[in-house]
Image (cartoon, rainbow, N blue to C red; front, side, top):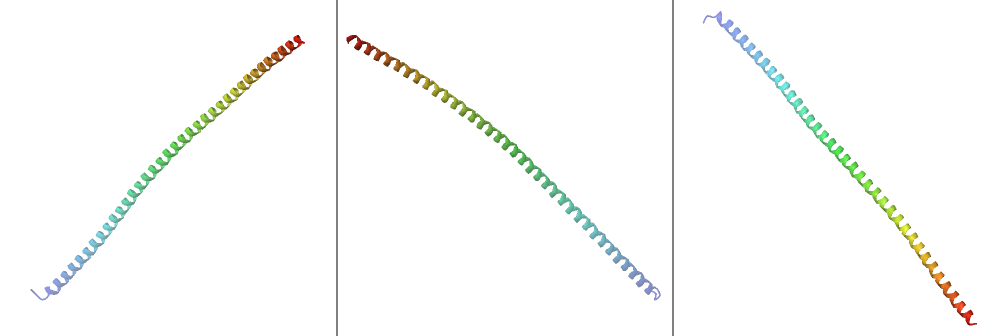
Amino acid sequence: MEAWMRPRLISMQEEFQKKLLEEREKDQREMSEREERLRQQLERGMREERDDCLKKQLSTLIESWQTEAQQWKKHQSELQEKLQEQESLRKQQEEERKQETERFQEQLQQLWNYIEKKEKKKRNGVWSRILKFC
């Protein structure tokens, strides 16, 4: 190899190595940027998936609460209805007892009047016999 070519070859080799190093660095940066974008996409996807899951859980919980609230209202209305029925029955029984007591008092009064009437007749009958003998 000739002497004048040697520095030129060394210079070309250094230039080639420099370009190769620049290409590697460029590839490394691009790879790092790509990895960062993929990592961000993955994180975003995971957040979205987590958010979707939380939304589903929340909507399920809300539906459950609404169902429970409806069941509670239904149960409460059934209890209210039973309470009204019991109150109505109690009033009806109270009225029946009152009427029965009044009938009993009337019958007792009739019996008392009948007994008094009989007693009066007996006394009158006894007095009239006594007066007949006198």
